Image 1 (cartoon, helix red, strand yellow):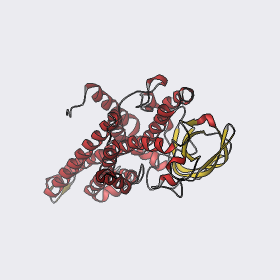
Image 2 (cartoon, helix red, strand yellow; image 1 turned 135 degrees about the horizontal axis):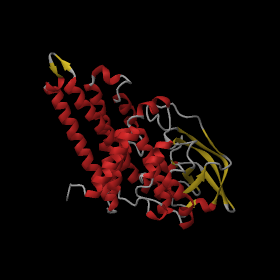
Image 3 (cartoon, rainbow, N blue to C red; image 1 turned 60 degrees about the vertical axis):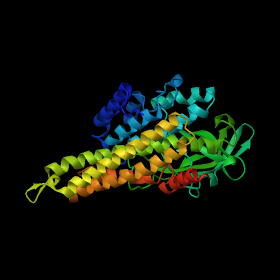
Length: 379
């Protein structure tokens, strides 16, 4: 084991940190307030290779590792959690096309996705199937060279703005083996979108239902074989869980840095509150827990890179731990700011709001425990 980053990884990390400082952090509060989706900023990130971090080089991907991606998302989230999280979703959807698409499909969609001239969304969750993803009901009935889709997807990031939707649909019987994956383009007749959801956080990205009403999609838009959809969805989520955990780590690291600065300048009872042992112990615990989360995320990322048989367990462990710790650390940082932390003039309340959903998406942390227990008990 070598816990030292390579020179290349350090350069990647520094580049992401610099982009976050210059292009994300100065605007994050305004984007949150205005509910603005910063497509132009994301396209600037794409120019640095951040739209296809682990997509192959043939069509413009960066072909980096999952560990490299974890480093990047950690740093980007220090600038804006919501924007970094959206980039992680775009990366996951693009990777699915790169990994499971044929040569024609990769050539058709990946060049635009790598520049983010095309923006992608991932559509698995439905109003009636969240944690029980294999119970999805969006139906795709084959009619010659097309599938006719009917159903609704819920909580879809980018809905209504994205150009490409990677959609899990039911082409067969009940259960996971009846699920397939279709790529649906924005202007397809029969595709529509619900109203933008009014959310606690993640306001810098739209979230809405994706609705299919006799939506005709060519069979040539199917990724891999019929019945492979659940496998595709779950394989994408291993990496997605590391990514969202890294976003929690980055947001919480930013909150910790703000708290350390604040307690050294805020005076009470005649001295900086950093002089009180209660504050010191709080900072010590926050730093320790974030470092533990960082190590778990890096271990999970390395397991995916190495195709470790237990990669799903490590990814679930890392996601559960990092998102729980990330939210707690950000909340503790807000507490150290006292009443000022509750004001929108300071970034703490936005970081707390943005990080809360990470304990729910990419599989709730309760489902992460189910996955871990199955591995531990051999079930």
